[in-house]
Image (cartoon, rainbow, N blue to C red; front, side, top):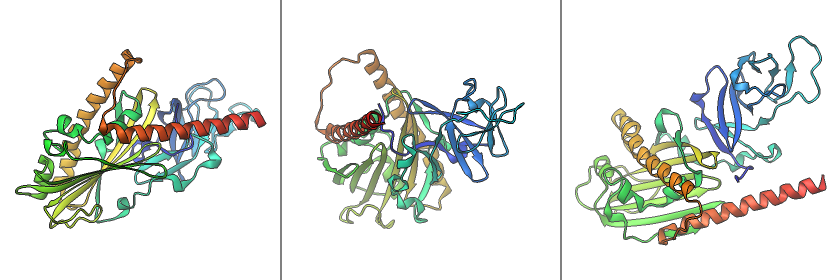
Length: 352
């Protein structure tokens, strides 16, 4: 079960071309298309004979069914039936609230009356020219054959960097340092400070460090799944200053992670990188496009295998260790939010 009253990324804006674009979101088939006023999201099913509307075409800002030519406007209302002037009662498909922000198309699967733009993440650095943002995978989501909360677990489990990403962004220096966990209004923040230790290979190259450094790894999650990894590496004694690192003493980067559930066991994993160093250097743009794709593919392999194992043995017991504390808290918060949402829906049905 998923939280419905929330924004999820449905696509990168660049994925939507001149024709209909199909994607399954929270088990629901959705079709997106462009109009003169922006991108529209509708239920991907014609109300006549159930053909996916994504098999049709866009005609004058309307979506035309590819079976019998019925046309639907941006509200989902049927506005044309070939061969007759009267529109049948109930000729309507569901429409979804949509917002375009930072190159992503956000969709609200729940009650449209509750769609609140203020519930989008407040990622102000994406509007700051002192940061350079590179879309992950060239502006396409990574398909992950795993439940989206396993991605959240992975992103908060900083220890795995040592073992899965040893050749790039991880090393053994971070394992023995404690993690501080804080609960936020709609999520969790985890901080790990790593003073006076060798830099990971990527950060050594980025900052040109010679010798030990001070590092931080801060992961923040807003439910249902807006997750930011903030990683900084600075000269010893320069100070831990997330969001405001002087390039003369260190480097900082953020990864914006937006896993959108496709089904219970598959996810559209949207992500992007923002860096606060060498923002005008095309070589570093290319490093992020290539080397970091490989890093995420390492996680993809782990997640796919993990879900396959869980699906084979759904009742097998699991243990928890100290590094799981943030994930346990996040899952409890999400379960509570879903339960409250379902309780409200049940109450509304009874009173109707």
